[in-house]
Image (cartoon, rainbow, N blue to C red; front, side):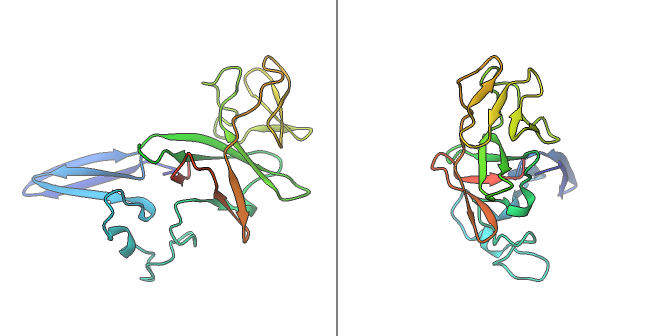
Length: 190
């Protein structure tokens, strides 16, 4: 979820209020449990995600037009050529995710994606939330100026010269970008 949501559950005179930062979970109050899954993802294998749809009652298409495809990353037009966008790839057996960034080549429309992490200091994101700086076609680490080629993520200057960014597999189909990396099961906005 881009922004946290406030969830309130009231049952039998009891109320529980929580701020939710994830795309799925549960809130309990007075013996009642509210389970939610944003985007139709469901871990329990039942058909609950199939009945959720947009306001027009169509269960096959979400409001963003993706059909609820858990591998949808972004429309091609959303991926910048002069900066990056952030997303989170989710592990299949866990609720943890890995932040990654995407950038589009202006000439070919090819999209490249890497973990949002500098090899020099892995705790430092290349895109801290406003888009990574791109200079001369290279992504520049905001903390110490390391420069990375767009294609293979090779560091050409800085404290990690010769190292590469960890790639995340994506593919472009019909004007949209999809996750194509066997390590991950789904994508969420950030």
